[in-house]
Amino acid sequence: MHDAFAPIRPASLDWHDGRPFNNAFGDGYSAREDGIGESRLVFLHGNRLTERFGALPADGQFVIGETGFGTGTKLLLAAGLFLEQAPETARLSLLSAELHPLTHSDLERALPADLPLREHLLAQYPALTPGFHRLDLHPRISLTLMFGDAMAMWQRQSARVDAWFLDGFAPARNPAMWRPELLAELFTRSRPGATLATFTVAGRVRRALAETGFELTIQAGFGRKRERLEGHAPGQWQPRHARHGHAVVAGAGLAGATTARALAERGWQVQVLDPGGVASAASGNRAGVVYTTPSGSASAQNRWYQGSYLYSLRTFERHGLERRGIGRFGGVIQRVVSARQRRKLESALESGIWTAQLLAWLDGDHVRLARAGSLQPPLWCRWLLDHPAIGFQARPLTRLAVEADALVLCVGGQTGSLAPLAALPLTRIRGQVTEIRATAESAAWRETLCHDGYLSPAFDGVHCVGASFDLESQSLDPCAGDDTANVERLATHLPERWQGLGGTNIEVVGNRVGLRCQPRDYLPVVGELPGAANEAPHPILLNLGHGSRGITGTPLAAAYIADRLSGLPSPLDDGLVAALSPSRLWPREPGVPDRPSPPAAESR
Image 1 (tube, rainbow, N blue to C red):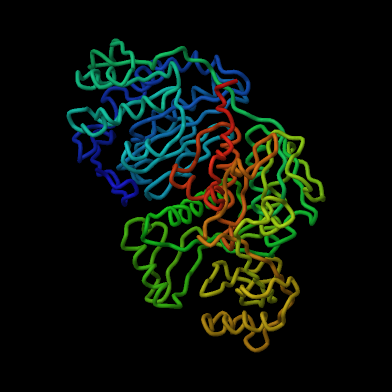
Image 2 (image 1 turned 180 degrees about the vertical axis):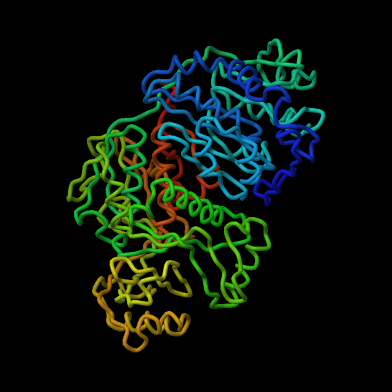
């Protein structure tokens, strides 16, 4: 039995005439003669994808599930066919498990140069860390890579699948990928009429699939393989629709802007409301750190910290924020400031959950988070909201029942005026950031440095130094003592940088105060408002409580919210969905059921 989120061991490969060969299973990843031709016949033709993609409605969606990602060739071929055959507004979701993924360099060598979306896959291919990884290969095509045991991953994936690619080396060489309980799990994830295709016709595989309920036929094989297998679940397959409509998003900070953009990119018309304007509250700092706290534990909290951080890095790279001048991602250097922090970092590095590609010691007192950095939240929020399907009004949300198909509350700490959110158990922590004039020396710095505060690179000639941490005061008025404390901590932990900024002649040119808002369990509140608290005629979802991690947490939270409302597969495993759910903060009233989830998209 596999630990669902155990450290990942990459595939060990040899190369035979340019073809990758897995040493552990003694088998190749494709046919010797024509791997592309085999994949097209066995998996694309075997699932009738050409005609089914062509039959999708304009707002259709299609989900392909796979048991072994391998080189990704089959899914990229399916993606290319989808772009050729499906309506221009339909969406494709690809879901694939892999216990021993290829390294990036092996994947680059293994993928044929002319495969559709090859460069997009390589650009976003994640570090080999356990769990779910959402990749946005195309505006209409997502890939959720689930690194871990196929059974454990599919048990935590709630999607309903239209077509299955059953792969994972020959049953005699890799029997775990063909065990009856895994095939039964796939059956439970299948829509009526869902199809399957595989290269193997081994008797025990056919028997196990038939016992789960799949109906099977043997077809002519490819090349030297005389036969292959096709099948389908009972029922008549029907194309399904993705949901979309009109959504209201309350809040124009990081959570609101990322949510509005994610919905707009899925076909929604979005109205954003915020009386203070865009990024007017805690999201309005000149610069913020793209960062997380590494840990050696695979708990839900730490899976969220790592997964949301890695997704945010992919998002910023995909949108070209450094090129646009919105961010700088030269890495984050963390100075170790306590024995407890050192133990956590050592545990993270020893656990295998954090790879050297992501985190490494520079010396005995500093680690480096590669690809991390700083960005300007106000510019990021404005860029996100600059979309033809998004409108903005500088006014408050006054009631929870709105004239829309959905409402998403991204109001940070401003929940007190919105019953029933007034009782939401959130902690509000005052923080003040100090702005310091750049010097000729400091203007060249590109990395972000953290200690028990941080120092950003200069944006428009100004560095951000922060931030105070005040549990007592809720005042939004700046405090000179906080500026002094921020500079003194900089002098204590980063004396060379303090000196480079002018030392005792440092010029403080401004400051900014905000209230960090988070629950006591340090996880954000992301998901549907419990039924007992929602009397509106439409779903109400929350995306708030990100605390000091709003920059890194909000892109993945927004993707989850938008996918949930659209009826698309989730980028989060079921354990994370439960850990983030607003329901955890509301006591369950006897006899009062939770509001049901929005109806499945296929019900239309």
